[in-house]
Image (tube, rainbow, N blue to C red; front, side, top):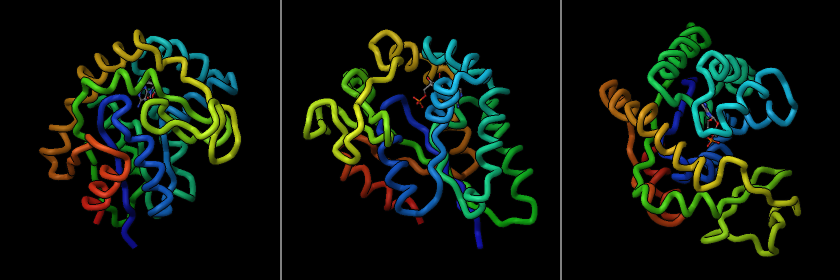
Length: 219
Ligand code: AMP
Protein backbone atom coordinates (compact mmCIF):
# COMPACT_ATOMS: atom_id res chain seq x y z
CA UNK A 1 0.00 0.00 0.00
CA UNK A 2 1.16 3.51 -0.79
CA UNK A 3 0.18 6.21 1.68
CA UNK A 4 -1.36 9.25 -0.05
CA UNK A 5 -0.46 12.63 1.41
CA UNK A 6 -2.28 15.59 -0.11
CA UNK A 7 -1.76 19.18 0.93
CA UNK A 8 -3.61 22.21 -0.43
CA UNK A 9 -2.43 25.72 -1.17
CA UNK A 10 -4.43 28.80 -2.08
CA UNK A 11 -5.53 32.17 -0.71
CA UNK A 12 -8.23 32.54 1.98
CA UNK A 13 -11.71 31.56 0.72
CA UNK A 14 -10.40 30.07 -2.54
CA UNK A 15 -12.77 27.12 -2.03
CA UNK A 16 -10.25 24.74 -0.48
CA UNK A 17 -12.46 23.93 2.52
CA UNK A 18 -15.46 22.97 0.40
CA UNK A 19 -13.44 20.92 -2.09
CA UNK A 20 -11.19 19.16 0.43
CA UNK A 21 -14.20 18.16 2.56
CA UNK A 22 -15.75 16.59 -0.56
CA UNK A 23 -12.47 14.97 -1.55
CA UNK A 24 -11.96 13.46 1.89
CA UNK A 25 -15.38 11.78 1.66
CA UNK A 26 -14.62 10.61 -1.86
CA UNK A 27 -11.18 9.14 -1.09
CA UNK A 28 -12.14 8.09 2.45
CA UNK A 29 -9.20 9.86 4.01
CA UNK A 30 -9.50 12.13 7.06
CA UNK A 31 -9.89 15.83 6.37
CA UNK A 32 -7.35 17.53 8.58
CA UNK A 33 -8.23 21.22 8.62
CA UNK A 34 -5.85 23.33 10.68
CA UNK A 35 -8.22 26.28 11.01
CA UNK A 36 -10.96 24.03 12.45
CA UNK A 37 -8.52 22.27 14.78
CA UNK A 38 -7.45 25.66 16.12
CA UNK A 39 -11.03 26.93 16.44
CA UNK A 40 -11.81 23.77 18.38
CA UNK A 41 -8.96 24.50 20.80
CA UNK A 42 -10.41 28.00 21.25
CA UNK A 43 -13.90 26.59 21.88
CA UNK A 44 -12.49 24.25 24.54
CA UNK A 45 -10.48 27.14 26.04
CA UNK A 46 -7.27 25.06 26.09
CA UNK A 47 -3.92 26.74 26.67
CA UNK A 48 -3.14 26.33 22.94
CA UNK A 49 -6.53 27.81 22.04
CA UNK A 50 -6.10 30.87 24.24
CA UNK A 51 -2.69 31.53 22.66
CA UNK A 52 -3.91 30.85 19.08
CA UNK A 53 -6.88 33.22 19.43
CA UNK A 54 -4.61 36.26 19.77
CA UNK A 55 -3.22 35.62 16.28
CA UNK A 56 -6.37 34.35 14.55
CA UNK A 57 -8.35 37.45 15.58
CA UNK A 58 -5.74 39.62 13.84
CA UNK A 59 -5.47 37.48 10.70
CA UNK A 60 -1.91 36.46 11.53
CA UNK A 61 -0.29 33.03 11.59
CA UNK A 62 -0.34 31.18 14.89
CA UNK A 63 3.26 30.40 16.03
CA UNK A 64 4.82 27.48 14.18
CA UNK A 65 5.63 25.40 17.30
CA UNK A 66 2.02 25.48 18.44
CA UNK A 67 0.47 24.58 15.10
CA UNK A 68 3.10 21.92 14.24
CA UNK A 69 2.44 20.14 17.51
CA UNK A 70 -1.31 20.01 16.84
CA UNK A 71 -0.73 18.73 13.29
CA UNK A 72 1.79 16.11 14.38
CA UNK A 73 -0.65 14.82 16.98
CA UNK A 74 -3.44 14.60 14.43
CA UNK A 75 -1.38 12.97 11.66
CA UNK A 76 -0.11 10.36 14.13
CA UNK A 77 -3.62 8.99 14.61
CA UNK A 78 -4.49 5.59 13.12
CA UNK A 79 -7.03 7.00 10.65
CA UNK A 80 -4.20 8.84 8.82
CA UNK A 81 -2.22 5.67 8.15
CA UNK A 82 -3.50 5.15 4.59
CA UNK A 83 -3.44 8.84 3.75
CA UNK A 84 -4.64 12.29 4.66
CA UNK A 85 -6.03 15.49 3.20
CA UNK A 86 -4.27 18.38 4.86
CA UNK A 87 -6.04 21.72 4.51
CA UNK A 88 -4.35 24.87 5.85
CA UNK A 89 -0.92 23.48 6.69
CA UNK A 90 1.80 24.27 5.80
CA UNK A 91 1.34 28.02 5.51
CA UNK A 92 5.00 29.10 5.55
CA UNK A 93 8.39 27.72 4.50
CA UNK A 94 9.17 26.97 8.12
CA UNK A 95 5.95 24.95 8.42
CA UNK A 96 6.77 23.11 5.18
CA UNK A 97 10.06 22.04 6.73
CA UNK A 98 8.21 20.92 9.85
CA UNK A 99 5.83 18.86 7.73
CA UNK A 100 8.75 17.11 6.00
CA UNK A 101 10.13 16.24 9.43
CA UNK A 102 6.76 14.98 10.68
CA UNK A 103 6.26 12.83 7.56
CA UNK A 104 9.82 11.45 7.75
CA UNK A 105 9.21 10.43 11.31
CA UNK A 106 5.76 8.90 10.75
CA UNK A 107 6.57 7.23 7.42
CA UNK A 108 9.64 5.16 8.31
CA UNK A 109 9.47 1.98 6.17
CA UNK A 110 6.31 3.17 4.41
CA UNK A 111 5.94 4.08 0.72
CA UNK A 112 4.20 7.40 0.37
CA UNK A 113 3.07 9.74 -2.38
CA UNK A 114 3.09 13.46 -1.51
CA UNK A 115 1.29 16.07 -3.64
CA UNK A 116 0.67 19.79 -3.16
CA UNK A 117 -2.44 21.03 -4.95
CA UNK A 118 -2.63 24.73 -5.66
CA UNK A 119 -5.97 26.50 -6.12
CA UNK A 120 -5.20 29.22 -8.66
CA UNK A 121 -7.89 31.91 -8.47
CA UNK A 122 -8.67 35.52 -9.29
CA UNK A 123 -8.31 37.09 -5.83
CA UNK A 124 -10.49 40.15 -6.56
CA UNK A 125 -13.67 38.15 -5.82
CA UNK A 126 -12.50 36.68 -2.54
CA UNK A 127 -13.21 39.42 0.00
CA UNK A 128 -16.91 39.39 -1.01
CA UNK A 129 -16.86 35.61 -0.68
CA UNK A 130 -15.43 35.87 2.82
CA UNK A 131 -17.99 38.36 4.16
CA UNK A 132 -20.84 36.22 2.77
CA UNK A 133 -19.49 32.98 4.21
CA UNK A 134 -21.43 31.14 6.92
CA UNK A 135 -20.88 27.72 8.44
CA UNK A 136 -22.94 25.28 10.43
CA UNK A 137 -22.14 25.36 14.14
CA UNK A 138 -23.04 21.66 14.35
CA UNK A 139 -21.68 19.82 11.29
CA UNK A 140 -19.31 22.42 9.78
CA UNK A 141 -21.00 22.55 6.34
CA UNK A 142 -19.95 25.73 4.54
CA UNK A 143 -22.47 28.09 2.87
CA UNK A 144 -22.22 31.33 0.98
CA UNK A 145 -25.11 33.81 0.98
CA UNK A 146 -24.13 34.90 -2.55
CA UNK A 147 -23.91 31.55 -4.35
CA UNK A 148 -24.69 28.67 -1.98
CA UNK A 149 -27.40 29.97 0.34
CA UNK A 150 -29.20 27.60 2.71
CA UNK A 151 -32.85 26.85 1.90
CA UNK A 152 -33.99 28.30 5.22
CA UNK A 153 -32.22 31.45 6.33
CA UNK A 154 -29.69 30.77 9.10
CA UNK A 155 -30.31 27.00 9.20
CA UNK A 156 -28.13 24.19 7.87
CA UNK A 157 -29.77 22.17 5.06
CA UNK A 158 -27.86 19.06 6.08
CA UNK A 159 -28.43 18.84 9.83
CA UNK A 160 -30.69 21.72 10.91
CA UNK A 161 -27.87 23.34 12.92
CA UNK A 162 -27.56 27.11 13.35
CA UNK A 163 -25.36 28.92 10.80
CA UNK A 164 -22.76 31.26 12.19
CA UNK A 165 -20.17 33.63 10.79
CA UNK A 166 -16.50 33.22 11.69
CA UNK A 167 -15.15 36.07 13.77
CA UNK A 168 -12.24 36.52 11.35
CA UNK A 169 -14.53 36.68 8.29
CA UNK A 170 -14.83 40.47 8.45
CA UNK A 171 -13.51 42.85 5.78
CA UNK A 172 -10.72 44.14 8.04
CA UNK A 173 -9.38 40.80 9.25
CA UNK A 174 -9.77 39.35 5.74
CA UNK A 175 -7.39 41.99 4.36
CA UNK A 176 -4.80 41.08 6.92
CA UNK A 177 -5.23 37.36 6.09
CA UNK A 178 -4.55 38.12 2.41
CA UNK A 179 -1.41 40.07 3.34
CA UNK A 180 -0.26 37.15 5.50
CA UNK A 181 -0.96 34.75 2.62
CA UNK A 182 1.04 36.82 0.10
CA UNK A 183 3.99 37.18 2.44
CA UNK A 184 4.18 33.75 4.11
CA UNK A 185 2.23 31.17 2.11
CA UNK A 186 2.44 32.15 -1.59
CA UNK A 187 6.20 31.28 -1.75
CA UNK A 188 5.25 27.64 -1.10
CA UNK A 189 3.86 27.36 -4.64
CA UNK A 190 7.37 27.74 -6.09
CA UNK A 191 8.88 25.69 -3.29
CA UNK A 192 6.75 22.64 -4.15
CA UNK A 193 7.00 23.28 -7.90
CA UNK A 194 10.78 23.00 -7.62
CA UNK A 195 10.36 19.68 -5.81
CA UNK A 196 8.21 18.41 -8.70
CA UNK A 197 5.20 17.67 -6.48
CA UNK A 198 2.93 20.60 -7.38
CA UNK A 199 -0.36 20.31 -9.27
CA UNK A 200 -2.26 23.52 -10.09
CA UNK A 201 -5.94 23.77 -10.79
CA UNK A 202 -8.02 26.67 -12.02
CA UNK A 203 -10.18 27.44 -8.95
CA UNK A 204 -12.42 30.04 -10.69
CA UNK A 205 -15.97 28.92 -11.42
CA UNK A 206 -18.67 26.90 -9.74
CA UNK A 207 -18.17 24.25 -7.04
CA UNK A 208 -18.95 21.53 -9.63
CA UNK A 209 -16.49 22.92 -12.20
CA UNK A 210 -13.67 23.10 -9.67
CA UNK A 211 -14.55 19.62 -8.33
CA UNK A 212 -14.22 18.08 -11.78
CA UNK A 213 -10.83 19.81 -12.31
CA UNK A 214 -9.70 18.56 -8.92
CA UNK A 215 -10.61 14.96 -9.79
CA UNK A 216 -8.58 15.32 -12.99
CA UNK A 217 -5.36 15.95 -11.04
CA UNK A 218 -5.91 13.23 -8.42
CA UNK A 219 -4.49 10.02 -9.82
P1 AMP B 1 -8.55 29.06 8.01
O1 AMP B 1 -9.71 28.41 8.69
O2 AMP B 1 -7.72 28.05 7.24
O3 AMP B 1 -8.93 30.24 7.18
O4 AMP B 1 -7.59 29.58 9.18
C1 AMP B 1 -8.04 30.58 10.09
C2 AMP B 1 -6.88 31.16 10.87
O5 AMP B 1 -6.26 30.13 11.67
C3 AMP B 1 -5.74 31.74 10.04
O6 AMP B 1 -6.00 33.07 9.64
C4 AMP B 1 -4.57 31.66 11.05
O7 AMP B 1 -4.66 32.69 12.02
C5 AMP B 1 -4.85 30.35 11.76
N1 AMP B 1 -4.17 29.23 11.07
C6 AMP B 1 -4.76 28.25 10.33
N2 AMP B 1 -3.83 27.42 9.82
C7 AMP B 1 -2.63 27.88 10.27
C8 AMP B 1 -1.29 27.46 10.10
N3 AMP B 1 -0.96 26.40 9.35
N4 AMP B 1 -0.32 28.18 10.71
C9 AMP B 1 -0.61 29.23 11.48
N5 AMP B 1 -1.84 29.70 11.65
C10 AMP B 1 -2.85 29.03 11.06
